[in-house]
Length: 83
Image (cartoon, rainbow, N blue to C red; front, side):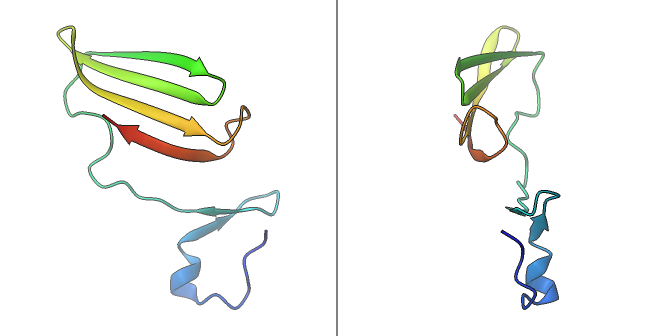
């Protein structure tokens, strides 16, 4: 979907038009999802559309980030959740 040409400049900066004429929303995550201190990251792929990043410090898990995609192409991010 191409961006509507009537979107004002301020609002248009929130979106990105991709080469294949799709529209993506720009997202800024303040503070980030990953913990400030870690010495190991383990990645698992429990399904074709999910990635799980486990952050550890001295073998103790201090954060887990689960990333979900719309489908197995992983072209569209659905969510990223830290627990």
